[in-house]
Length: 355
Image (cartoon, rainbow, N blue to C red; front, top):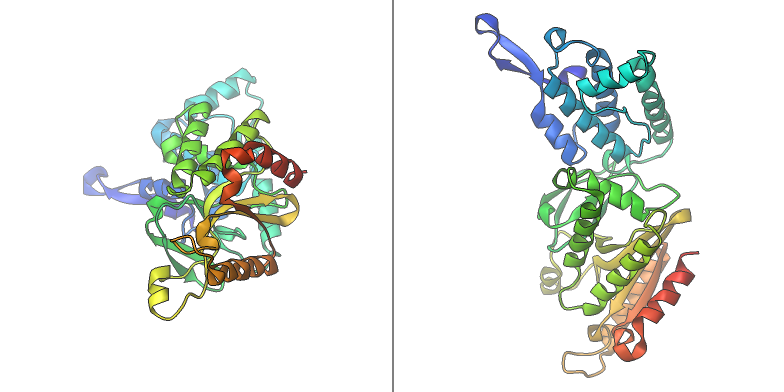
């Protein structure tokens, strides 16, 4: 990326010339998610340098007006959040910068405020340079979840594992931050969700309620046990204040086949028995946990007769996931009958799982 990419030339200058303005189309795209043409690390660096150069200048003598400064700061904050960078500039507008500076007696230079962020960006660049092949925007994972329709996925860079969702992207969520050795926590998920455009101005409580509703809406409409498990875990996490509790993601795409399972069956058999998993959790230490709730289709025909081939397919699927490094835990649908006390079962299970 070049610094000039942040600007566009538009007609309207003196004498019929052109004026340079902030590239709003680019900024809006970057707030929605990582770009394929511009790495988040590069965008953050150039935005930070632009803000450092322009924010302390009066609007009349700056290449950015006050609104453009505010929009650049908002975009920078979103990208830093995606990158997992903790330091932030402590203001949202040019006026906010002057008030912050005045409260501290004019002792904090803008360069001093930018330096910790630049240092974190440099550290990230060094760590990624030794990370081997990198996935989407430098991250090592593409986590597509809460899918209500099958996304159409294409590989736009095979060497780096960069994907793009070309259809049904609005019907799924994509977690686009790096998942560290600490795993993916509820706090990580809530913070990521809160920075999406549609949630940015909501209160934290409203953001959390909206996230819970969105996740529950993605559960299989024919599976009440899925919704029951999700509700139980959400209440458990809420009682513990969310925080470092591992996040639970429903309807996760672990694999992708460009054809539907129905089309594969018509063409002579599936390559993968299942592409979507009921739930997935990223626990500390690199543990990847898959939770599956098995209904009658996993062991019986529609009329209730024992189906040995269906059970064999389930067993084969379990072996494959385990051999690929996933921890797989299956629940039988019957375990969610009221007589089986499912909440007591789930409480003990999660207490043993999350140690």
